[in-house]
Length: 492
Ligand SMILES: C[S@@+](CC[C@H](N)C(=O)[O-])C[C@H]1O[C@@H](n2cnc3c(N)ncnc32)[C@H](O)[C@@H]1O
Image 1 (cartoon, protein in one colour):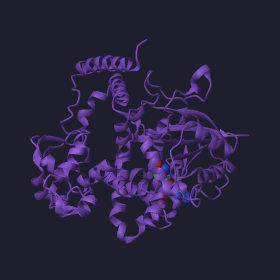
Image 2 (cartoon, rainbow, N blue to C red):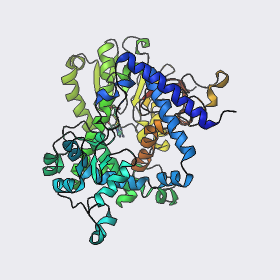
Image 3 (spheres, rainbow, N blue to C red):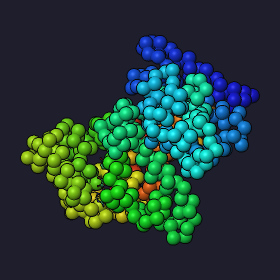
């Protein structure tokens, strides 16, 4: 019988052949690990066959490593994740990626990096341990951090103590001049595409919260709490407050700005018309009302309102957000405001909805902000305002099982419940290749005491609030944080 290792190797070999053929036919290159990231370096994925082949190769390579790397090394790679986080944090905040970009492919010596960013090469690793022990350190301490990251292909050691970027480290690049961001650290992330801001936020707020995750789970006062101010982040900061309250304090103005820039960056990656495909909007009768619950400024309704002039839209959010919504629509689609095709309503989703005939309650990225206890309150308020024809539509990242989902067998399960599964013997969800949504899930716990959910979990949550899921609309993407949509009806 063929061993798992041989099956994995065959998957890699066959997939690479497919990938090479696809790239050759389209005259695109497989990316060079040592060249910086650019949207064009991802062109090889544009063909769905190539994208799938790249996923299979990556998942199989990781699974092969899990077989052959000594288990004590593998488990410490995971246990020591915080050390890599500390190393990336130090390099990110001391602008190493920008300095290496300016040095080009020949690399920059650690002493020259230190000379540029003002950091002592002996301390620039930035962790407390180093700062406390500087007296006995030699000049290659920066190299220790960069080298650890280079072992993981994040940076590369070109010659002894000389480092350069790889396509992975270049993701941390603000694309600004190092001199400029060193001189104006508070503006480092302004007008950037947001990835470095997101990384900086994760390595600050979420990283600190992660150190308190177990204490929060173990403390009887918080073990079962779903309160947003009882998160590991709140414990790490020593105050019973939400991250939003923390951001409102004047000393955290930079962190608030950084978070918002990071979030804008994530939103920019979503297709702007994703909500158009979340539901069959053409099936709603004329003048049917769509309520965007916690809709922010109503961005998700814009492409639908443009296409379906026969529908009416109510954008709901907290009062200050509604002011921004009015401004947003007066710029984007003033005619919809004048004709009352779109109206704005300050509405707390924890309070009862106004009584009216609603065709669709729409929620985009709301449920993942809250624990089950809180989601249940939101969903029950909507259920109480629903009639038998009302649809509930929500857009969220859906967490897949890592094993084969038996719901798909024998025609059982909800339509769209099971995503495309990876070929055996790979993990059904492609394992760590699809790790982003699992990262976000743990991040939601650390920062908000909230979570991303599997379909099974959503189903249970909705049933408890008087709803029944009817279908999951899936759009394939190589990014597991991509939003899918779930449709439900009021349960009798
Ligand atoms: C992650 S954002 C999603 C916004 C929008 N649905 C979108 O996808 O662009 C969450 C939204 O929930 C709103 N929100 C938070 N608490 C709320 C409450 N109690 N009632 C109504 N909206 C609330 C926030 O103001 C924010 O606009």
